[in-house]
Image (cartoon, rainbow, N blue to C red; front, top):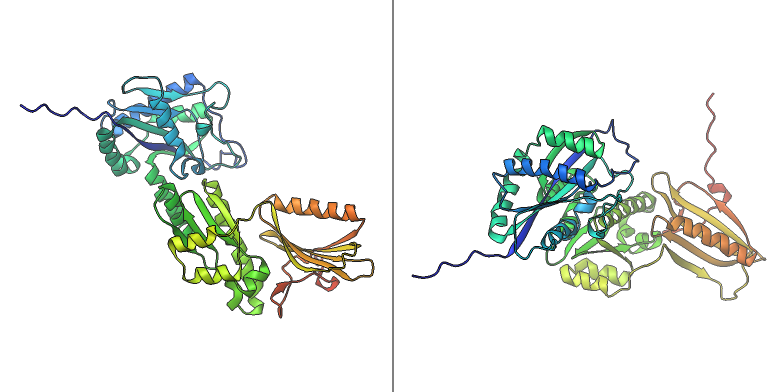
Length: 428
């Protein structure tokens, strides 16, 4: 008689979350999420969650379960490869057992943070109104495969949280939850798609989903105003256009002169939204300065060819970009800087146009400063103040309250006294 094969001892894992939808009337939208629980309270909470999951999933006592006594925002869970839940599985496997044995492991801390960086919650201000408590099942591969199918089929639709768990979560974390529900990571991704679908962020889910699940190949999107993003593995590649480049050879080249300001504002708005969201969800955003040759290449290149074109160009670094339009070779010292604050009521600072004059009033330099990071605006201001101090130059700053550009040259221009915004009328 043939000897039956021994059951596989290869371990696998499948993760989910307990989602807390906070009551906006009770939550402080600017406050920090709660601190992690201590060991005793994390253990008590884990017991409640384990009972709920055993009931909902039809018995999970043959599987290991690990969870932290902590809350995270969505951007900490949905990251390329789901590293946080992967770290939980690694902690379970490395907990000192020679062979697998089902066990409930609750992670708590008396110090307000976990010593393991991979699971330490960021606790960023304004992380609500959705906070997540992740958990991870660990077991033999065939058992986890069965569990995964059940979880994906029923957890979100049928996973009712018990009253005991609801009360424990709210008491231990000190929050008021309008709704509590179990979900898988796939459920979270689907909910994000519903959240973003139909608005300006329609393409964002496609890019992020490609990165979250570490799909092979390249995922690309071109937005309404010509923003271009390519995602491959954990990197996002995108083009940065100055106003002049955008209007002259970039996506705005086909627009009429009177449409350029609105068009570039639309490009800048989408660029900031997408770049910020991609970075928040754990992607490295690689900025490349647009130029005509690359523009022509990308009109026909797709997939790996487009990615190669991006990677062939050094990425932008630092807090800001300087676009040098004119530089007088005479190198006369700067006597006066005239600075135009190119701004939008919604987006804030978009650029600074700097005109440097010598003592005779002749143009020495014409430059545009573009912030690349949120802190770039202040860095530019500090740099210009220091530049004036080092050369003993005066400075004048004009705030026209809008983008100023030459319609014939399709390029940013400096402000004149006539461009000053009209004073607000006093009410009668």
